[in-house]
Length: 297
Image 1: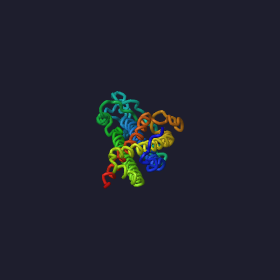
Image 2 (image 1 turned 30 degrees about the vertical axis):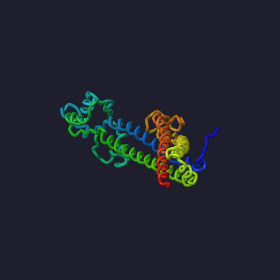
Image 3 (image 1 turned 120 degrees about the horizontal axis):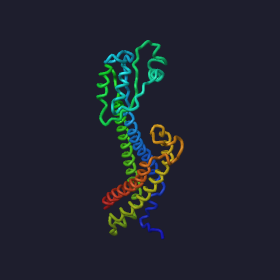
Image 4 (image 1 turned 90 degrees about the vertical axis):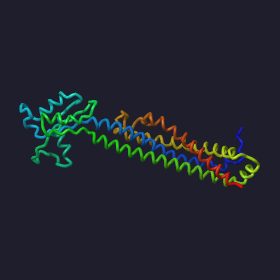
């Protein structure tokens, strides 16, 4: 048996325009939410990678070291092999150095006659900061430079924080616009059914009862629209996840997997959107209707 609609709310609050508008906003909210989670995940992976990277530059690598028994490069390599926390030290080849310097010095930097330093790459697995590493290596080969990647990790953290703040602002704007749309729809419905509501209110109907009718209708429409917009965003999110797979380091195969590309935290968060939209619809319609009823003579 169909539920009674004494106030004619099915006509006052259309089941087309309001859900479509909310669906569009939920689509944007899903993209913003996914962007927030993705930026946090990528930043975590990139910060760990950047902070663990060591680059050691040894100027005049063929000159004698501090002891005079071996070259500066050999002294640094021997010291790195004995230092706890330093993993996989590897001397970069001349070709690798040329590739790094090519944007500034051309394809073959050796043709310029420059005395280039030797470069050793390694990973830092120590529990403390590698700040003292440069001092230790400077004792065996003065002038040795150590770049621990901490600066890049800090920059990545700052960039991620900015992206997350922007995504949070987008979500707040979408929520505010959704509330405004619900308020406008509720006031339009009240204006359309003004005579009926005025008579019912004059006969003793409570403000809470009338507001409950409106909020129930608005909540159902908003929740349905939000669910539709969230579902419509899934293929786009899967496509974006496939594009970001090479940067995420999660093992996801680029271009494949479909919806299975989406990370578990996103699957756990997306259902919140229809629930949040329903809450916004209920609260906004309650406030709008009650304020309108208080203005009646």
